Image (cartoon, rainbow, N blue to C red; front, side, top):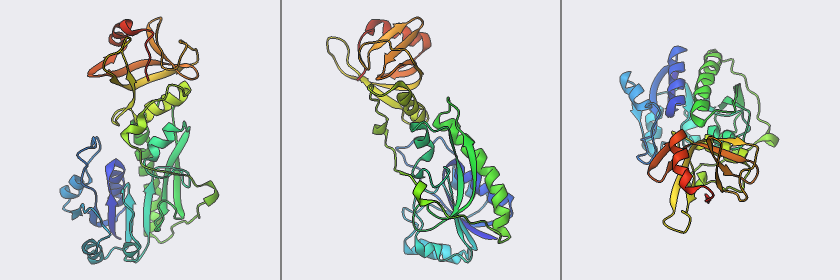
Length: 311
């Protein structure tokens, strides 16, 4: 079965490998140029296609005339989108003789839109999943083909959860792709009353508000820790001085209060704690200005600033 695929990131690679494994003939791949401002910790779809001699393109807009014509010449029987970041136009969807399918990293209709893996952690969810659905002009709104649930552990970060999503996607595709080839594709409409949609996250969205409960701050930290830009706050030395950015890469929530005001830093036993609006956070890994501080290094550093506040 002849396929044209729109793919990016590790899920893009999982999807492409699944297509080959299940007997699809990938005629062309469309991907994105890597953003120089983004840390590219993931695999390259372009490299994957190049190693196999499959034509691969990375246009700024796949919906413009030359690229629509390129897709038409490939004579696809089916289209797939695996973590491709742009909407596919109606013109392209109408080129395919069969259907068009998108793989999304949530249990639709919940968490439509951008970066669902980060958003489910920000919101403290305990489960998510992957959904294969029919592509329509509205993002993530087409009928569902198949879903697979993923449990979210309390210590999962965006990186570890993304690995679980990739593993679940491989299993789901191995179950669904044979049905698509045989023309027996399931189809279940989404329940619009349960739909939620989230937008793109920016580095500045990682700013911590110490008036929040400790658990909410923890969820933000694990949602944007490495390889993402990190949750951050600022430190002003007692008596004044230059403000420094503090990026918190890892911390754990505690139920007990340790200070009078949100953001107040305290040494308690063998740990560094920060008061939150409810409970406190134990800091374990931080970038304090240009210094990366963990464990004993952090404790020794903070001795000079105990009682000061993060803001």
